[in-house]
Image 1 (spheres, one colour):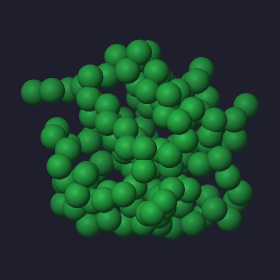
Image 2 (tube, rainbow, N blue to C red; image 1 turned 180 degrees about the horizontal axis):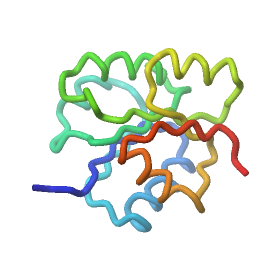
Image 3 (tube, rainbow, N blue to C red; image 1 turned 90 degrees about the vertical axis):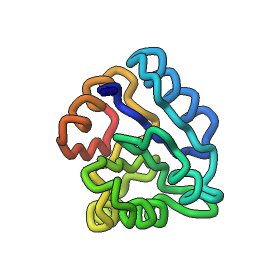
Length: 137
């Protein structure tokens, strides 16, 4: 049985993708990291993933589907029940955070990602904790 977390990250910003890739693959040494550079054919691409993600990070401001639309698609899939889906966004106004919470995200991380605390935050999310890290300190 594979206990290594399986990660899906959807992000259109090349610098954000590179940082997350380094954190997940180099620092955390994860073997199963899939990064989508856009949300084109999102649902079909997600359903084709094997193994299925055990944690999903979604950039909110994407095209053609934004993070809210991708979340809706994911939550319709039986296997995503219990899978933490975390929003990543650079715009962390209270209004948007409330929208993210209402939409059903399992948390939010502000961009740029806090490199120093990411490993611990990642473990906490996998452990079932809902984290709303909307201010980088």
